[in-house]
Length: 55
Image (cartoon, rainbow, N blue to C red; front, side, top):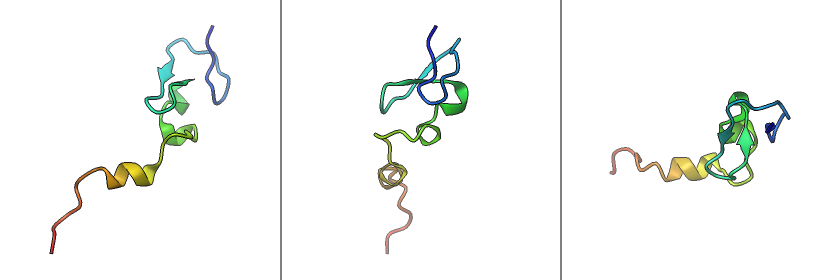
């Protein structure tokens, strides 16, 4: 059986991170919940494109 790469829990339904391609449980599936080395919140916010009104 597969295990969560963060907490080691047995995985019945693994979630794969889109950034680091590792598998996680439901609690650690989000990049910010498993301290993903390939994810940066600042990068995602700057690439969002909703920069607001321009002056």
